[in-house]
Length: 486
Ligand code: ADP
Image (cartoon, rainbow, N blue to C red):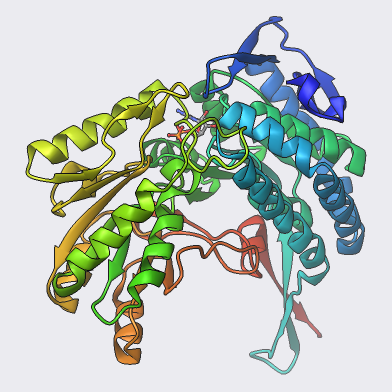
């Protein structure tokens, strides 16, 4: 991989603690490999408990100075980090595709998307306004300050190796919180490249730390149990999120969680069907279906069901599969064998229970872990494939008759992250937007993520919001001051 990138310094294999690159005390390393072919890419430091505690100590020591910086000073460093990320876009994309598998064009898009949070919060750092409240007595003055919550830990997944980090740490850093990042053991190289750029941007020692480890449960336990860590932000699977929330309850640590989704995508009979196909394609097949806002269930009104299904099948069959590193490939490998086995088992279960296969349904052999873009018809909302997060390139079509029926089905899940629907009737657009129990709704749009809008879920999909003017709130505490004039 080192031969493919122009700036070799972006390939870092040691953890980053207190401004230093460091090896595990045990000397242990783990192998990062390419999901497209299993080829080893690098050996990365596999930290133990002591080094994670060192990172927390470094962040704790760095806090007073970092919070004392003005917002403008913190913003200037974030801005430099943003510019360095943009300048390194191509190398970062190559590294990301190598360790994660997504098509190179999507990787480039993620670098820009990830960088956009750094830019946004570089600007927001200056705007952490407090408040003056009209007092309840003539001799008092009331104020509200927003203060940084303290050391923030971020545990991040492999599906967006850069953006899931910047979406958490940019607001934390802007607010004045030092960070300890535990990236996915499957995609640490992107995280370490970000750390290299953060080092160049000039964050003070201890403000930006990355701990790499294959022992995620142990690192998670330490980050939750240590009361010097005041905030934990996690993106990943719902069971792990629940476990972390439980662990954080012991010391009432503040948590933000961005967990699994089960996005409905509803096509009403007044929709522009061609536009709906385009929206369904991007929201379903981006990152080979491995995003938490990916469409999981496509509900189509009965009188347009056949027409939609046919147009959609044709579009799906045109997708180009292969190694994400090859230009033009749209569907790369799944992250690993386990992900592939899960997709296969969900498809088998659906077929056994009466779904029909319109296209796909098999592995493709150009890469390891490749699964063909697949469309299943006549799925029902009770099947496992409709109740679990597929996280793969499989689309399920479910017919429905009425608006109230489809809203009930769409909401019949513990998840509540993203939902999409296509319709033209303005009354329906309002009614359905309000009735969907989801944190984010795309109306006649299949891609809705942007740094300027609040990203997050309700119900079991999470707590808190990322991005937008709201995103920094997860990293500040309100302090009320009552000043007596007497
Ligand atoms: P995914 O299915 O996306 O891999 P996970 O929830 O397993 O989701 O992983 C997301 C992140 O959580 C990764 O960084 C992973 O290492 C970490 N993780 C997994 N299990 C635990 C755990 N028990 N405690 C803390 N972190 C964990």
